[in-house]
Image 1 (spheres, rainbow, N blue to C red):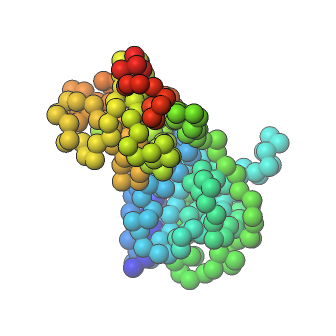
Image 2: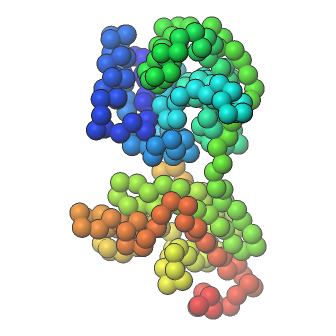
Image 3: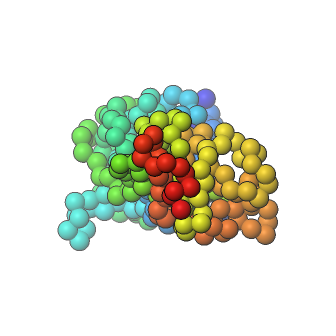
Length: 285
């Protein structure tokens, strides 16, 4: 089965997503279209990269992922060096987007299996009016029909990288940021388990967010390890530190987002107290 995923900032109130799916279904009867999300903040390619990165490993080899966020090509406009529709291969899957920073944000420190710029995008200016449909989709369909990336584009080794905040470690301290707030109001940070465990799995710590009296000093394995309405910190399926309220999003509240006022780009601090650094956790306060 041929699989294409869609990630866009088009929302669901207009006809745009239906037009994309109709075009795909009309072009091939043997195709499975999967929506990753269509609620990316307009032009926010870092958020698009987060969503795709969080789930692409659940898809089979040769899946083609279309990222229709900030997808209008830029060709030497206003002194820019351009934003060209491009194809990247990574872990035996394909990712098609404009080279607007998505690829670098998605890969992080990883290396791709190949990168190609789609050729002949200037042959018809009408393609620019709905570029996700008229430029990215045709490239995806050609891949599914058996064309190689070399037949569609020109190989390149350079791609842009969006500026994403990174978690940093200092002496007995990690500084990270909220990078996503999900449907339940859970605040997902860019602090991963590997960085956290560098300080020792049994090292006492205090996780601070927003205010000094908002803190957590234990990592739970699941939300229900704490009573309903209590704050909780877990490492999620993708091993990123997440701050939540157990069953906090109940229709009248919005989980950690509303109850604690956590927002994207808010700083999260984790202070560790390895042996000899402080006598007790209470000395932190």
